[in-house]
Image (cartoon, rainbow, N blue to C red; front, top):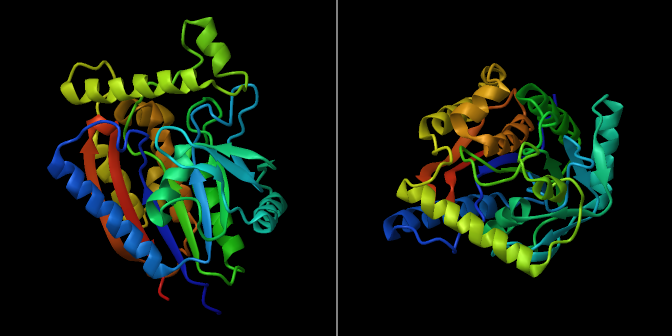
Length: 318
């Protein structure tokens, strides 16, 4: 049997509050060292193609039409918080080929010809390549905010495996990134909000004003500082949940995650912990029958950033 092309997986948390909320210098030094180590691993792997899975917090996708998954043949980053703005270097031909293959395998997938993404996509590229000048990228959105359309863990694993089968025929070295999580519950509005104006804002797509963006930034910054001081009503971070999730991925025990219910994820790890499913999709895209080296594993709970911040890098043999 022919060997699979070289493939790597990176699970990486993100937070819009990097560089905005102050954190302990020792914590920041350790965090920056982990980000630097992830960059070193990725650049040493030298990917020729990047499959990037990320969520959105009502920047490009709204409740008027919220797909569970969507592949972008073009994508532009909005530049929220301190993340870069501008077009991603999307490999549109590969994006459409992947979408076609998924449809042929009875995996219905939405396609956006003009995807709009936020820091959930661009921050990983910023940390690894310094901006949006990257190897060719295929961006895949995953709904992580709006039930009942948030994909279940089993379906995420199935999507990852289907992506992996597509990549079996891809000759380029491919890095599959899952950007999101781990445990956290930032002030992302839901349709359960009693304010009709809030429900309308997350239902109908519109371009926010700079004042809207500034107000959102200040609100999220204040939420992080309140969480760190213990004066917040938000769900606290859950390092134990994060460790168990990372253990399952590192050890290849992906089937064990399928018993975790939607309610248990939200109860134990927070409403936005669904973002962690991007890691499962990306991890499942690596070949199941090959030994995988864990080259980097790091975790910190950083309430100022509203982040159970994890990094996990694995790759197949060259």
